[in-house]
Amino acid sequence: MLLIKNVKLNGELTNILLTGNKITSIVKDLGDFMDIPSIDGKGNTILPAFVDIHTHLREPGFESKEDITSGLKAAVAGGFSAVCPMPNTNPVTDNKYIVSYIKMRARESGLARVFPIGAISKGLKGDELAEMASMQRAGIVAVSDDGMPVTNSNLMRKAMEYADGLGMITISHSEDKSLAEGHANEGANATRAGIEGISRVAEEAMVAREILLADSLNVAVHIAHVSTTNSVDLIRWAKAKGIKVTCETCPHYIVGTDELILNYDCNAKVNPPLREERDRQAIIAGLLDGTIDAIATDHAPHTKSEKDREFALAPNGISGLESAFGLCYTALVDSGLMSLDRLSELMSKNPSDILNLPCGELIEGGLADFVIVDTDKEYEIDSSKWYSKGKNTPFNGRKVKGQIMTTIVDGNIVFNRETEERI
Ligand SMILES: [Zn+2]
Ligand SMILES: [Zn+2]
Image (cartoon, rainbow, N blue to C red; front, top):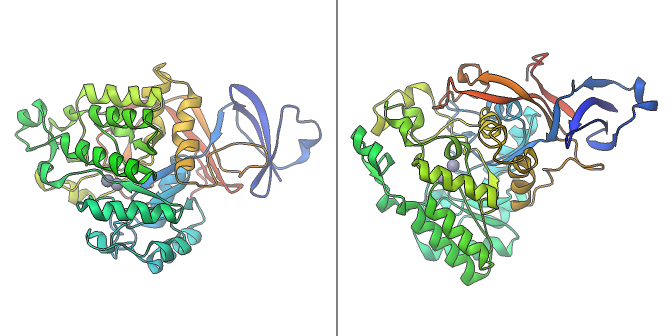
C-alpha cells in the first residue's frame, strides 16, 4: 500500500490510498493510515495522468531521433501515463510482428503504457489495406497512415468500414499533398520569409472528405492535428449533424503561429504548419465549446543535425511530450480561458475515451495512473534538459507555469522531479 498525502483534488486537500495498481480510496482524514509508506504531495494538485493518442516514438528504425525507452522517459516526465505511437516506423508498423516488438520494448522499459496504432495501408503506401485484425490481436487500438495521407478515397472508405467492424477508429492525417508542396502556412509570413506556402485547403479538403465518408458509412473517424479555422468549422458542423467525428489539436497550434518561422527556425517547421492568429483563436474557441475533443502532442523528435538545415530541407515536427502541460496550462488555464478540469478532460479522459483505453480517470477503484503538478511553479522551457532525444522545439526560453512534479503509473512512481529518481 502507498499513501499519497496532502494533494489537492478538485480544489480540496485530500489523501489517496493505493493498493497495488489501484486507487483504493480517497480519504480526507488520515486516521488509521498514518503508518503506511507515503509520499507528500505538499499541497500540489493531483490529476489523472495524461494520455497522448498521437506520439512518434521512432522505434524501430529511427533510434537516433528517439527510441521507446527515451520516448517513454519523456512521456512520464511530461505527466503522461499512456502514449499511442504512430506507425511510421521502419519497418512500418503494418503487421503483428512489429506491434508485438513495440509492446515488448515498452514492457521492458516499465514506464508508461503503450497502445500502438497500426497502419491503414501496407507500408503506408496507400495501395492495399494492412492486416488490421491480426495487428489488433497483437495490441493496436486504432489505425492511421499518419505522416502520409490516404490519397485514394475508396481505400479510406474501406479502411473506415473495416476498422469499425473490428471496433477500432480510423485516424486521419488530413492532407491533400497536391496542395501541400510548401514548407510553411501560405500567408503573409511565408511570403515575407520567401518560403513556399501550404494552403489551408490541403487540410480542410481532407477533413471534409473524412466527415462525409464517416456520415455515408455511419462510422466514426478521428481527425488528427486540427490547425485551421475552417477545419474547426467543418467539424463543428459535422457534430451538430450527429456525424461521428472526433478530433484533436496539438499544443503548438494553441500557443504558436507562423510568426515563429520568420527567423527561419526549423524547430518551428511542422506539418500541418503553424497558422495565423485567427486560426489559433479558432482552435481555442473549438477547445472551449467542445468541437475539439482532445489535445495530443504529435511528439515528433528529430536530431539536431536534421533540423540544422535550410528551412526547406529540414524535416517536419516538434518534440512535444515534455512541454505539453506547461504550454497548455499557461495559455488556457492560467490565462483564465478554461478551468483546470476542462484541460484535464482534454488531456486525459477524452483522448482515452476516443480510443477506448482503460485510462484517463482518477476514481476509487480505478487505475493508479496520475500526476502531481505544481500549478504555481514558473519556469523557462529548456529542451536541453529533456529526457527525449528530440530537443526540437520553437518554445525554448518561453516562460510557462505548471510543472510536473511526480508521475505514477500502475501504482509505481516512475518520475519524481525532486528526488530526481532517475527514470
Ligand atoms: Zn500527421
Ligand atoms: Zn504525427
